[in-house]
Image 1 (cartoon, rainbow, N blue to C red):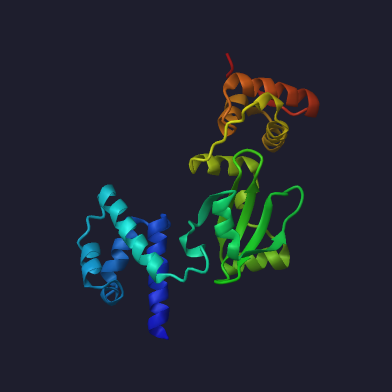
Image 2: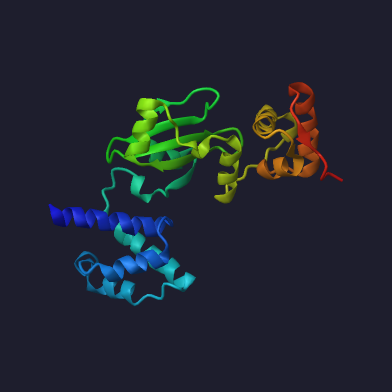
Length: 242
């Protein structure tokens, strides 16, 4: 039993390193301080790890690829939770179907935070704060919850403020390389709603910031924003526009 628990804990640390939630230096220290890992990895892979130059980005990149093959073969394939980063961005569609195959919604926050829910994996019981960003980039943003935070949300309705602002979802999507460009942005209700919400969350938001968040050229962003200001009475700054 203890051996299985140790192996499970080791696999979890390997995944943390692979997905970027553990620094290369911390992973290196963990490997060197754990004398039982050779039996888990096998002699060949263990020697490759302990002889690796962890200060080299290329070496770390290749080592992560090798360790991912090992981790996949050593992980229960019934869910994707271990493979997801602590903050993960998942495209809606085939990718999200795979991720959500074992996740059940256990609480929805409701208005004005209509995009927020808590899901729990029925296989490993990991809980996730999930934000549904369907207006701009069609992604789910997921945040790994610990047991205490999950219980506080479920029992006391005290939500972790990770995804409270829609602007944060847009930025997280951009940082993950998710950025949709609308074919006819001037006719998009979704863009108007989003610009209005951004201005309500941050009165006086600059048009250059709006354009960046929504992958719009500055002229188009200004055209839509002025319509939104007339219709919704929000405040958007245009001082950086030529």
